[in-house]
Amino acid sequence: MTMKPQIIPRKEHRISRKQVSPNALRTLYRLHTHGFIAYLVGGCVRDLLLGRTPKDFDIGTNATPGQIKRLFRNCRLIGRRFRLAHLHFQDEIVEVSTFRRAAVPSDNEDKEEAGHNKRFPRHIKDEDGMVLADNVFGTPEEDALRRDFTVNALAYNIADFSVIDYSTGLSDLRQRLIHPIGNPHVRFTEDPVRMLRAVRFAASHDFVIEPAAWESICELSSIISRVSPARLYEEMQKIFLLGSAQPAFSLLEKSGLLTALFPGLSRWIYGNSHRLALLDTNLEYLDQQYRNGTPASLALFLAALFGPGLEKAALARHRDSIPRRQALDETCAIFMEETSRTVSIPGRVGNQLRAILALQASLNRMPPQQPASIAGKPEFGEALVYLHLAAETRRECKTSLEWWSAFLLETPSVICSEIPTDEAPSKKRRKRRRKSRRSRKPLAENTSEESVTPSIEKSEEGQVAMIP
Image (tube, rainbow, N blue to C red):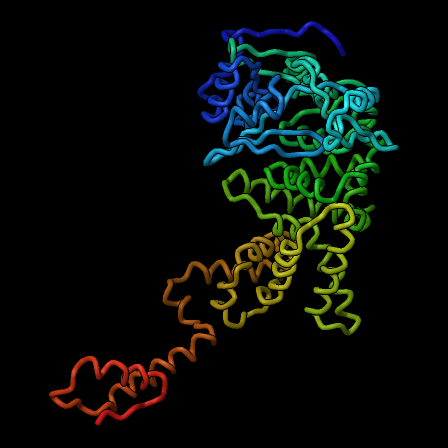
């Protein structure tokens, strides 16, 4: 896709420097004053044109990573597939990347002939066509045309405050269309994560994926498993924890990406519209919580998505004469083992998920035993949210939820009346110390203060020393 770039002057677009992070502005100005091209690039330009607040501000420049590092003392170079510069400010990290172009196999041959350092290869593809390394510098236009979608190929030029469109980004933005740059089949094969990004942008921005791109996603959905589990874990957080989990889940399920990512979950909901509707309701509730300013943790999201299936599997094990807690532990362990083959979920998150599900038995026991002690557990808040989700479909959970809601509305004195058992011994110890002080004999008038202190300390330790 080659065409003359469209330049929109400052007076014809809605982007203002007041909307841009001060740290990003300082970075742009420093690059510009030192003679380098400096653009805001990617999703931040898209969101600013839509009137949305960007999560971060990425910068593109013709300065090389080494030049960026010499220009900024707070710079850290990262990445193997792409060499990126991260500028660390007190409350923000600004990412600066050097303009790149689409590479050809001869790029590596030219590098070898020139005798350059081979530590960071310029371009590598695996046998399936997926790009493993891509470090070929290029022009701003070449950099824009190697991006994933047209709406992400827009740039904001700090030199004259104009917006530059190297493809059809502005037109697609008006039509709210996710349109890959180039052949969708080739672009998704080069980097399968682009399929997840298409789903994420469509869900979060209420866009439509262009028909040819959607067909390619449905056809290539299985190759998402080629991506490293660690990278997919990062993408899952972006998809599900930012307020658009329900529409994203629907697109993943329809495209086949859900089957490739979470085969066990896909089997559980296959052909069962009730289970699918249950998960839709759970995720829609978490999205609403995010919009209300209380985003869910990853563990709570996993409970909302996988919890119903895990509870049913654990109940089946329990009916085979396995203790309830052991059945749940074994079920969660199997889930973590299977899921980590595609998405690398940290063990601590898995433990939090198990704790949320394990606490449901205590929350549903009526009347609960030692409710104040239960309410003091770290996972209580998220377990209560999960109980709320379960109450949408199970009557007994509604009764439990009403009881706990009433309990939490009571006065603090009522809540504190339930004292955890581990506090009792400390009270007894304090009584014994007070008793020993009362039984102490009067001191002689000529006894000095210095001679008293050691004897008191010893008496508190139970080693009473008599003072003559």
